[in-house]
Image 1: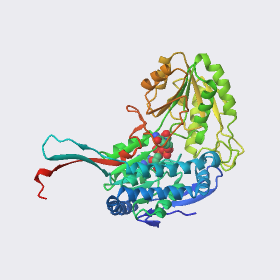
Image 2: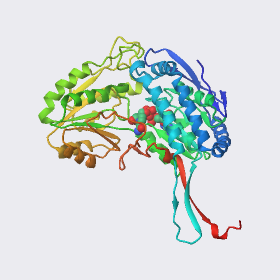
Image 3: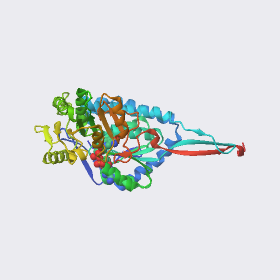
Image 4: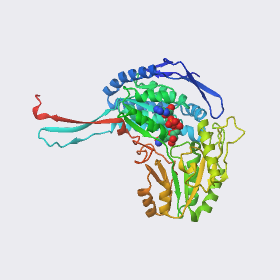
Length: 478
Ligand code: NAD
């Protein structure tokens, strides 16, 4: 299947001289081919977006909201078909995850359709007689949406919905590993009736992303991806509006007074969901020494229940990794750990007998020290590295011993202890007695200040430009 760019309401090969093949991580089979966008294509997309943006800005928010509701309905009407494509391109299980991602994407459009019409602004008292002060929220203008491959439909939806309902035009550049399912979202926005040029689609990897970020016509960049890329984007973007949602290295902390069964099952869920390729995955497990043995026993029981397999098989609860660089990173982190004293309790190498080499079994490693890559860096795979601690002070120090601070979880039956962690853990989002991978679309979500997990909270306000207006009604002539 050849999929084209979408520029100014037309599906086109643009000025592309090269194409890129997309291969299924599950079967190894080719799924399609996309053209790689050139600088001229980016120019054309910006031009089309500029025209459409004026039209979007002139519409009422109620009109834009109705279009977002329509996108949600269209997504819901194609759940099984889209989920199958997503499972084959990304690798996540059809039954337990891919269908849910389509529903959540629709839910995001519905949520922002509602949020948009309730985005009130303020009227403020003035220091001067006869003046009225108020604020207005205007669109940022043209938003480049640069997205990763782990939630290749949901993340474009999470960014496009608030951007469009607030009157921005968007140019989506999906990950080079998963461009096909993103094209489906664009197709649906077109069917929903967004004016031509409101939603544009370009393809490619770093170079295409850089061309978008530095294009003078692009006024905002919403980026979800790795911390290293986020930092490069911020440097290149200068003073442009950026929203950076980057990497995580989330710890799950298990205190001696915790419900150990709940903690064990949450940890496995946090590492098996999307095969650990989630920014809020359980990347580290910190366990109080007193309950270490009991916890590990339960953890292994839970981990053995994870069924690795073809994402289309209904028995599968965990699919393959999406791409070779991610699998190679798992190999590297595990061999580093074993060299430095990590004790392998389960899994540990790529599984054989599958159509690709991307199938990694659930892996558990004990005695993980702070010098190991498993502890220091985001592994982005189905691995649970266990580190023990003696006191709350030590647990907090270990949790904060990372330059990333996206999400963390604490298991305890003491409210007093829980609140100490709430105040002292440096993470944008903290779960008490819940897995690190717990996520809802409505609350603000993002990294903590002082970390490399990014800034901005993927909330509707961040897609608008707050303007302050004063009116001198004493001097108006009529
Ligand atoms: P990545 O940074 O490699 O790529 C993300 C996107 O940026 C891709 O579309 C890529 O082509 C593009 N890109 C690469 N270099 C660029 C450059 N110099 N300028 C502009 N664009 C560029 O990340 P990935 O491997 O696709 O995704 C995995 C990462 O995403 C993980 O670190 C994960 O934690 C993070 N993530 C974060 C969140 C969040 O909400 N915080 C959500 C999902 C994933």
